[in-house]
Length: 257
Image (cartoon, rainbow, N blue to C red):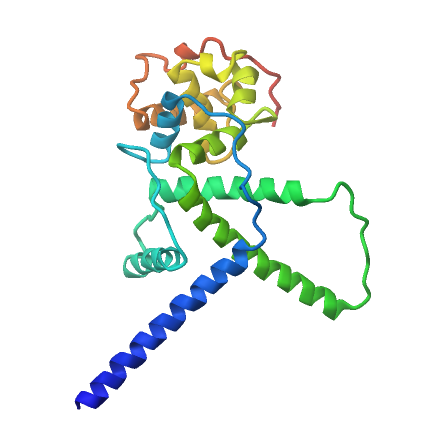
């Protein structure tokens, strides 16, 4: 009996060790093509702006993102899946730090792809369909491993504030703008540093609202989301019309439906 127990424990330990080595190997495989250093935001935003964004993600207290590795990352995913299976009716959402890390990782991955893309690549039509299909599958697998490795690498190398800067700089805020700086000028005619807290929250509202709603053209829908965003930011809406503090908002020509 003792021999059998030792054999079972030894086998379990060997299996766990092999799995850990496999996961670490997959991480190294995905990380091998990532640039050093990773491309990041071109500027730093004020701490007050970062806090407002952090609260929109549902964050509370100190801004921080946990560090993942090749083992804890899949375990976190399994734990999330288990919670859903145990209570499928519950509306689950990733924690604030995971959401920040995921979006920052997506923007960083897009930036890496753009930097690696040649200026112009001729389209080559290969009549060998089997080879093309195999190449597409290989690219898909490579993309998955690379994306996972980037997620882990960012969590270990970047502070949470840098991730928030990445989100602020690369998010789409509508009106053809990318990044908080462009949006601040397009909507309020001022740089991001000169926006009031309520004006900053107004721009963040458009990032987190489901679908694009312009504060001028879709004022009614925007107002409801804006009030909710102010509550997340621990800012009180102005009594009467919460849009009153947005007096600098620039009008635009609205599309008719």
